[in-house]
Structures are given as structure tokens and as C-alpha cells.
Image 1: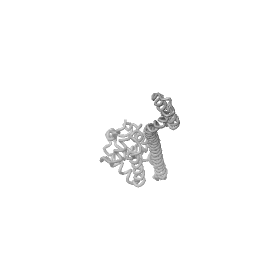
Image 2 (image 1 turned 180 degrees about the horizontal axis):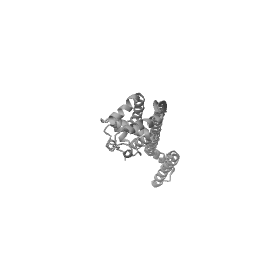
Image 3 (image 1 turned 45 degrees about the vertical axis):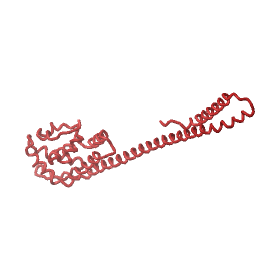
Image 4 (image 1 turned 135 degrees about the vertical axis):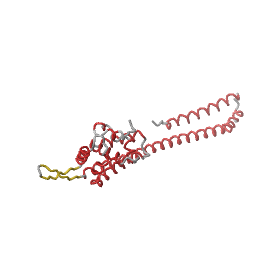
Length: 254
């Protein structure tokens, strides 16, 4: 909280004047003169007091400069805080806009496939997050228990929808990069915003992201960032995917 130093200035001025008159009075008394002529020398004392007045003026000037300096420093600190708040607000606005784009991409996804029952073919339309649920089912049904055929299975499921899925994966990557590369927030806040992002993903989104980063397993930037911030947290892959695949996911954030 800013100190109110301005209210003390009249006190210091009055104190300085009081001290000056005390000094002059003592000087006059110590001279021990009572004659009218000798008192004329009293005026000469003011010449000697000029140096005292000058010194006090300098002190007053320095004091004023110090006050102004302190006020200027306080203003600069307030300006820095305001700038940081503005930068953080801009960061959050962009972040949540990217989250909105993420949801828009999901809502725009559509998958049409045929189901044959009793010789009758029926078209089934999957929308939004239902697409991820369907893709997970296809992979889970075709995947060997030991996961040896994973690359073939994922490629077969992924390639027909690579346009939509790439759009989804790339946007997700850009959000994580935006957080990771920010110079506005510290590591604690980066972890926080990545957890907010993670909370936006459904379980089947997370498993499809998991399959994707394992499929592209060549030190890819996407995989590294997902692991760095444990975007797939709170999900036990040991019970869903073969152990050999689960071991390839190594989250860095505990």
C-alpha cells in the first residue's frame, strides 16, 4: 500500500523554520549584548544564517526529488502489473477461442458406415464424439491381444478419415504448443491450462489420441508434448490396450 508522505511535508517545513529561529535566538543570547548598537549586529547574523537556509533548501529539494522518485517507481510497478494482467487476459482469450475451435471441429465430424443385418444393409451416421467411439470400437475389435498388428489396424481405420482426423490432431497440437511456448505464464500455469485442455477430451478422444501418437512413434513433437503435460491423464490404458502399446506412453508430469 502506498505511504502518504505528502502529508508530512508541512510538518518538516515548520520544524526546519523552528530550528532556524532557535539557532538564531541562541546565537543572540550567547553574545550577551543588550545595547541597541550591539543589537544591530543581530542583522549580521542573518548573513550567516543564509548558509543554513541554503542547506535546508537543498535538503528540501532532495527530499522532494526522493518523493517524486518513489511515486514514479510506484507508478511504474502499477503499469507493469497492468501490462501483465492485460497480457494474461489476451492469452486466456486466445486459449479459450482455440478450445471453441476444438469443439467446432468435433461437432463438424461425421462418419457414415453400413451395417448388414439379415442380409439388409443399413446406413449408420455417427456425429461428433460418436465418431471417436465408433473408431475405437473398430480398432479394439481388430487388434490382437499382443498388439502386434496395431500399425495395420490403425492405418486401415485412420486413412479413410485422415482429413478430418488430421484437422483434429493438428488443432489439438497447436493448442498445446500455444501453452508450452508462451512467455507470459510460468510452468505452474502452463500445467494448469493443459489440465483444462485435457478435461475437454472425452475418454474415447483420449484413446484415439493415444493410438495416434503411438502410431507416429518417431519422437514426434505431438507425442512429446502430450507426454510432457500428460494430456491423457486419469485414464488407465493398461485395461484397454495391449501392454506393449501402453508402455510406449510415458507421461512426464506426475
